[in-house]
Image (tube, rainbow, N blue to C red; front, side, top):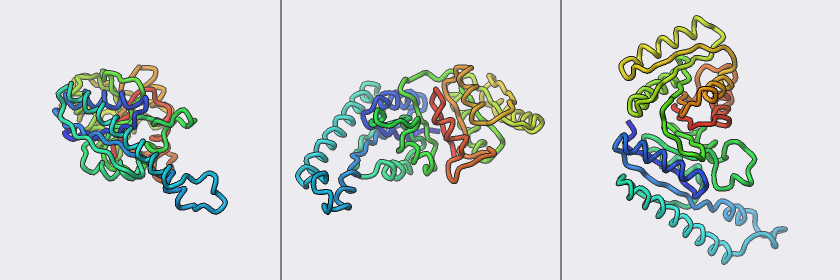
Length: 278
């Protein structure tokens, strides 16, 4: 299922977890890992676009920009080199690539050749960013069409998987991915439907169970009333889940224009990796 795994790394504290999770999946699926890093030069492009009028003292000179970009490119090469050494040691096929430009745009463009993209929850500037979800990963989540796994700093083995299911088209795709992952990891799988309608929730749980029986015998189902995003996060924390699998949109009552509020809340507040399926 995941023969081509793409990882986006930036040398942050999350990069180790990104490559660790990718390596485990690559061994299980006999995959190739595409390691991608971006030299983010947007600040220099912004400075050039603004011009010097009124900004003479803060707009960097051409020489300063060139030297700064050179240092960033050297850093990117070191990041790729380290990733390559780790993957070579694990005997995992890989490809390394760096690009210059906007991280969001480039990651989205490169994701077209991947079966799965893995990113850290936040990036290298997390110490100056008080958000729970990095700006780049948030933008990628909203626009990516391929499955996206968002991981925490600490790598963890996948033994317990939680699927949020509501019968929607995207949830059905998430159901398929959770089935393959549970079978591959030999993990325990729990399906929950968050619905105030007990009858509808029970129907969706039975629908999921019937599908999953062909993949794994370790399936638990549960219907819970309340707000989907809060209940999924709380359930995952209370049961020490190792992975949450969700569809990107679903039937949640409140939606944002592109990324559903349920999805974004889970990505922000979960304490385990999340696989987002569209």
